[in-house]
Each structure stands twice: as C-alpha cells, then as structure tokens.
Image (tube, rainbow, N blue to C red; front, top):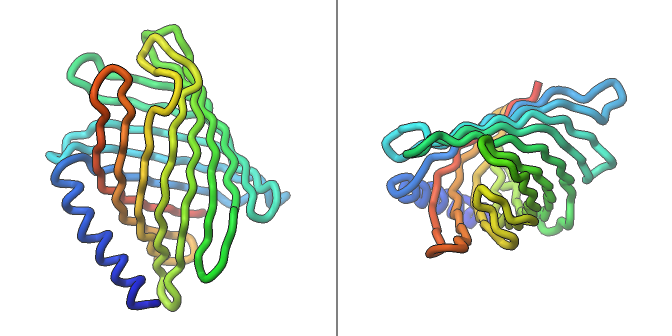
Length: 221
C-alpha cells in the first residue's frame, strides 16, 4: 500500500509541470486562529492568488470568515469575499457573502470521504444584479501510513441559481476536479501541491477546460 501511495504522489507531481506550462498557477494561504473560550468559534482568512504562466498576476481573492464547530465531523462557516481580476478591458471587482457546511460522509480502509456545501451571493461592481450559486464539493482523502503526507482528490460542482446582467446563466456553470498532496510539516503548518482541471460550461460559446497548478499553505495559530 505504501508503494502504491508513493506512486500516486510521484504521478501528481509529474502532472503539475504540464499544467503550469499551459495555464495558470493558483496559490492559497489559509490562516486560522484558535477557537473561542467555548471551544466552538474560530476566525479564519483565506488569501488566494492566481498567476499566468509568465508570472503576471491574474486574480487576488480575500475570504475572511468565522467557523463554528456544530458537532464532531460537522462545521459551519460564513463570511465575506472580495475578488479582483485583471482583464484586457476594465478590471473586475466582485463582492460576496458566503455560508457553508463541511461534514464527514464516510471512512474505512484508511480512506475518508468528506463534503462541503457552500452558498454564495455575488455582486459585481458596475452592475445592478446580485447573483447566487451553490458549490458542492466531495473529497476522498488517504493519509499515507508512517508519513506526514495525505493524498486527496475530488470534484466541486458550481450551480448558478439566477441569470444576471453580468453574465451568469441559470444551471451548471463549472466543475473543478483536483488532486492534491498535503504535507503536515508540524502540528500547525501544512503545505500542499496539486493539480486542478477547470471545466466551464459556456452558454454562448464552446465549453472550456483549463488546467492549473495548486500551491497552498495552511497555518494555525
């Protein structure tokens, strides 16, 4: 089993440079603080940046929020989002409110299956409409015995609830499928490397399928 797991690690690392050569590099920093006195509430901040293959910045996202441990295996969260996208025309700024539930689904044989359901209310500057969508993610993970590494993979489906004047169409808009390696450097620090396939369902043109490298850092305080 260990030999097969290390083979999966090598395969993912080999796939990543091919993705970077064609599309973007997506980086993420996830910062969390200790829970409140009741042991349930805790603040967090996600900082995401995207870069073109030549290193030019494409997008930055800030997602502050608060998590609430409802019970073992179930966590609720919510907060605010701001995103800035560099474009050939006027740059784009988007604001969102978001709410989500993260939960364990099943485990066995060293594997764990978890889910995350997120709701987003989206507003783009210079437009009047507010959009809304559901994001459903399912992840299968496997902690490699005797190592600090965890392998994970799974899809996230995006479903738009309303048509907007800035381009959202009701229905399936996107599917992101990722494979990732997490390295627990210490009890409070984790590094990750992964690959993501981004399928975009275009209503008025050909569908798009892009590939990206994922580089992440998670730190607890």
